[in-house]
Length: 284
Length: 351
Image (tube, rainbow over all chains, first blue to last red; front, side, top):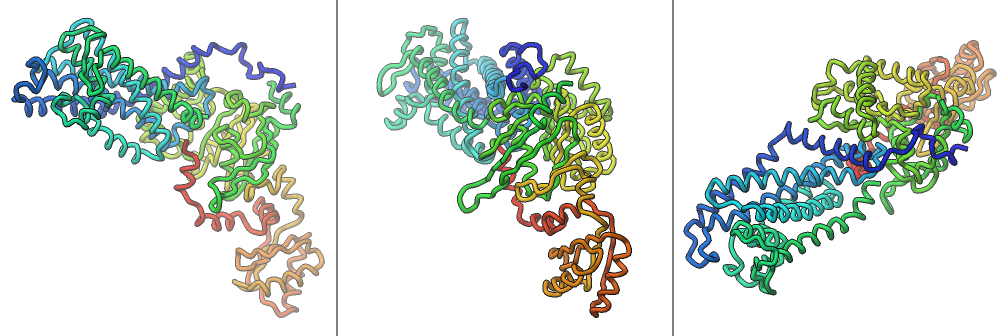
């Protein structure tokens, strides 16, 4: 009887799951990179916007009052960390858009009729793509900032910067992919991205230190995930590469680089766990 | 091929049993499938005929594991598609109705992606792509970006991507709708070749001629149920003699139609009289031989009824449809045309 015969598919042996999943994921990732190569405007815009922030804000606050910034740091150097994080953040926030367009145009259905070994491949491909893209954009900003004389984190500092950005990108990508499956269409997704983007930037320590803010805003900034990414990077730029170094005097206590990274990691894992049931439902 | 063996073991390669599916909730719920059952034997070219909105697309989407039925079972080659969707996906190639392309990729890149999603080995994948490019005459444009393709090109590319993994069953949803005659002929030829090569082909259509010309067997679907099933020639033969369409006036009323129906029913050699309410209450008759028509004319003259038009033809699939539903397929189409909501339909297909 046929139903009792599992080798019906005329396949000698089931190939390894890892081989199949990596074949799927690579093919899907490649598609996203081919799209990017032929339509590079998102990449360019993603670098241009923070670049404008860096140049304009840097110039605007070049004569920031004495004592605003810790230890006579120049405003450009202070702003650099904020803009790097903002670049990675807005890049990752867009992760859901290609997925949303695939849902809307029915391309996702084309993927779903294929015998994918794991449908996580679709999500994994987006995460890979957006991670590479956000890191490339952030590196472009870091190089520009260095050329503007705002410094460059050496050795261990660079590793700290990359790890911090990676954790932030994972967390924000999870959020954006979740929204891409939860919201009804790209209009709504773009609206959410638009609304989330700038307020999160302003309510963080990207543009000004907590000591400069009114208490309520200080609290918001101290709870904002962007701040947890900005401060370790700022510390790395200041030449302190120590996970146990205090990087922020938050209203609720002192934060070390390690605790910032811990919060970001927990956020990334938490968000992926949170969106998993949604993805399972939408992708089966 | 093992197709025959396991197809025969369970009765059909594809077995749909008592499928029910409704969209929406409460007052607005639409019953798309209402206990639909269907058996497709291995190696046949099978047609699903029905007007728009009769449940064809829903049936095919459930078969292809894109949609879960509210009730009922789906088996392909003995496999339960709901419990083992991945095994069934390997056996199926699906050509959807509205073709989603990635405009930025070339046709070949799209096929490569599809091949990887089916886990073909790279050399096998590329060889298979070359074969299909040849078979479907895509050589000239396969390396151009999909964004510039015409409807016929897109449909051929989609057919190629459904065939990449050599599926045992090819499922097509309205494969030639809106296509030029040349592309349509090309697709028909390929479908026949596939069937001759042992592939089971299941296609939906609301074109009578298409199903009549292509299908070895067909099922007529109306309001989410199968209302007639069989070999086209047999179904037509079962309807008996020639069809006659008769109008006493250009537009009669129901009462007059009923009167004429009664009169004609009594005539010798007239097997059946159906009032076609959607076409001005014209009368559709089945007659046993040619002589009957003359006799009808005499009867009507004797009853002092005019004859506006009288036409005679061999039974067609449309007559099979008319017999089962009391309206022609064209009228069924027109009746639902205004009721469809493209926005709601798009939502149904969106994940």
